[in-house]
Length: 418
Image (cartoon, rainbow, N blue to C red; front, side, top):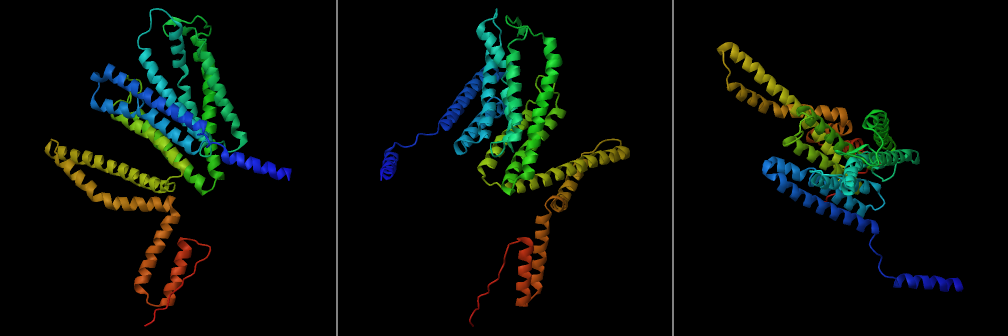
């Protein structure tokens, strides 16, 4: 009887309790998102005021979409959305850290333009933060692969990668405080010479960083092999966005001079920024499972049109070079007719080339879909020529079993009274 009264008291207290407060993690996430948006907007406005007159329209657009505003805003907003919908998933917080680090970096660039006449504590702190804030961009990006999409490593055995990343970050933060120099000034508490830092310490630290990054990447494939269809579709989204980013960066790196002060400016910078923005978008779609299975269509279309573009580009420039050499040999001068002829050839080749490339990719990578399409096409031809109802129903059952592979299939035909 006493136990029953205690249960009734607890039930009454629970019913009379105030509404559950919003999750503190969610509140913190949206506050950080608001700070990132505010900080990115303020630093962008100040940057445009300071150097906007020296930039063209394309440079301004790429700055807005890229590192100065678009990337930190998109990363922080999607991170807050993930934390709201999946509060216990670490991937949301790993997306938030690069956004905060980029806002801090843009702010430091404004304050560290002109060094003071003498070293002050504030300037020392700014230089110190500026020397290691980039860690919170690269380390979380690497660790996303380890925790994606569940928010945890594939197995507890992979936790050593987390501890290695934390150790690398803490070691570099402490080390950067005891360098011999702080910008143009000697460090009053520094005793580690630059030669030592750029020598054995940097080599060992770099090898550990490569180990951490490689382990995170390998863990993603280990998870893929052990996962079911839904988790595999999620991993495809991340791999597709990461592949696009690597490809765009490689193209930008090889077509521009990486040592130039305006490296990746203009169109290259804009393309690079868009490929970076695709990463958090793909992660959010995968974790929230919004139109999850569309990734197969996206990959298929991307592969088809990438191959077509490469082949048509080779044909186009090959025709121009060949026809120009023929015209020069015949008349001694170049002719614009070569461009017209090459364009007409490309237009005529596009449709048949697209069909052939798509059939090749479907046969090689999407064999089940290709076989299903061929079976349905053969069934359509069979239906046009067959009039026997028994043969039609038997063929329909066979095609359904072969294409859809259901556990059981039955055909029910309603009798129509004459």
